[in-house]
Length: 216
Image (tube, rainbow, N blue to C red; front, side, top):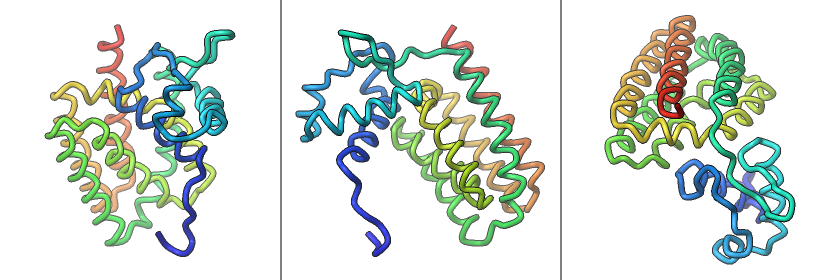
């Protein structure tokens, strides 16, 4: 930990763990979040747990039912398509700005994340694959040096991590992701921002097409 980093608060730690549980399928769509058992499991009081659940409710990851409690949100194709349409607008602009700014260290990090994602996919470690995939994409987004755009993109990603887990559950999809990541990194290395943006758009569209069939 550097001098500028601080340890996460209880709420932040619980929020991160809930995100991982939903994205990794340990908390599945439609499943009730048993607050007492979860608070005991995480070693926290119900206060930071409730605060984390309210954040997730605002993102659409969980829903609150009066007198029943919180439930993991059901998957929704309409929700997915809306989020990916907004992502396309934001991330295309970010990549066009970011690619010309990438240095050697940035490109090496992108390559490392792509390889890490491929290794996790080969091992069918969906949680690790999801995290490595996120690091690759956000290294590109954040290289645009547009923090407001990055924050909006992060909200959209947080709301749809569970869909990526569903997508990655198919071996053919994991193999396709590996190939697409390699092409995206190569376009970034060549400094071709438009090509990189086109590849990322196709990358998102392939995911939506596959999920449309899976959710149907």
